[in-house]
Length: 378
Image (cartoon, rainbow, N blue to C red; front, top):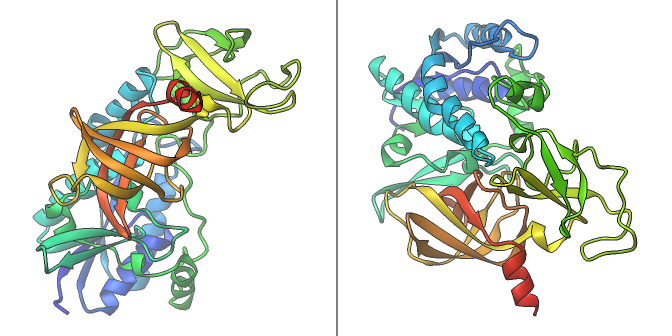
């Protein structure tokens, strides 16, 4: 195997720490970089970047590599956070992890690493890269641990980025990564996985968005137009949401389509024009089920769209692959699913797979809902 100068993104977590260790064991020249991506309230209890850097520095010390602290906060705010707020303001639910990977970790970080003389970069993502000699293309593959696969978040990576990237822990299960970390005495071997992005951290989401997004209260209506309560601003709700609606005590009189009198309520639609939140009762209410979506802002790993036909797709992270048919659509693509998909959410990513190969995807723009489901039932 060729030996390279590899710059590793050290986050302070166990996955990137083991990544750096494995690469050094393989004989590569390894340099660590800690990325600071948020500054607005970094001294607060919710953002742990200071502790994360100390953890990353401790890891570098144990492994025996240099580490550099790099501040990408300005790029993050311009390229990721501004888009995040725009999407929420428009009533959609964006995925900042997808944007962060495309704009920061595999763009700003990659450019910085190349300036340091790197031949490759590496991160602790659970995914794999394979060069296909038949096509000459680099392919993004799912991580071998199905419970940790992160290819969904990486689907916007292009050929130039994939050609420069290594994902060593993508070949391992998480239990093996933890074992390696303990065996070599890494100080963060038992550190809990991060559960959010730094700018939100563990703080209440609504409290955070309140600072940045204007909001106007409005009515909460059910599927028959009856008012059940008042929402605090459409941006604070996402399709499929069950908690925090403030209507837990409201019960239907008698069993209705989609659920009986004690079924929970779910957010099903957001009407920006009327500032109205629509909710339905029952997990399998037709308004929560979709057979078709249209995605735009498309990115394909191969640099071109796959041939229309049968594939599998995810419309949210940690979802099982769902069989679908790909077709072209204006400014993007359309997916038709054999089985209805639950709470398909505009702003989230629809990511396409051919077996273990992640082909790319796009941002969900339009979804069929009650109309098509009801028509099919008639």
